[in-house]
Image (cartoon, rainbow, N blue to C red):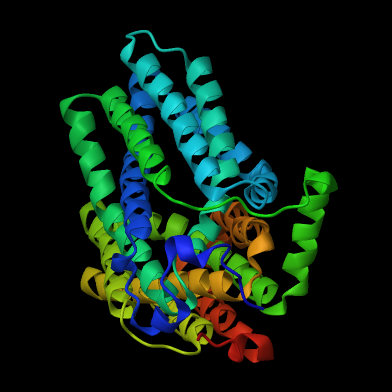
Length: 416
């Protein structure tokens, strides 16, 4: 199944020019990349600022948990509704309104934190609103690249987006720490609000026409139709299930047992270098895949995803910091590859009229088991030991990453 861009004449060259297309030659894509990158920078700063802002005022980890949960819960609860709405409304309009809404909520949070006597209840309420708005706008991003770039240029476009996000993961937390140290958490959140305003301006430059939708069908009918579409495309749900299992293992072992082990072995500084190496690997692969022609892109992504087992194995074997850094870098290469492969495959092979809804179900499915992995990691390690669980987890991760290749529709999926 292929997508059908709604009006190629407004945003992309004639199909005869597709093979020579560079995303840089599409002004609308440059606006989207710029706005998204700036918004990602603010989002990368916000969690660090919020953590220190709440702890500085209350000193309570329980209060911090409430604030973080207030944002994450609506983000999950409203995501499928956001996907249905994104398939009904013009992407430009939805993203502009969403960024304006997030600018308002984060600006209000900054005001509360800078007031001198912040209200925890107000921060919780505002973060809940921020999470809900993000849930309604995140699925809309799935349809942006297909509306601007023809199939031949989407891998390069997604490589640019992935590379940008990888760079922000390295820069954002560092910048947040500097701003918090010099000016306070409130000002770091204020910068986040400003990035949303700038992103809204950039999204307003996208000439994406409204999608044709059956408005009389009803929003909940759209949600059900999106679920049917998700289930009907075998390669989509198979890969989503595989990513669900892989993320569960990764979150538990790398996210929980990793820093626990590092605290008693290589130390916090070296562990920070290990995590940074993964982000660098992601960035490097994004640069490589910008020009690397790959026909069976999804298969390529899952083969490289299996490299994520290496740092888990290294953790279990209790190797030195240098080998852990190397393993994390290699795993970052795999993460970068599968991120680009998956985004491009969805954009090129899922019908555009259900793309946002399918993307919403994919996001939920891929990450729904993360809390399970985080919760089980400690008890399992207490029973069998961290090295044993890490080695077993590495095996499970590698097998899970490669299992989708046994499905014909995954192996046969080809890019034009």
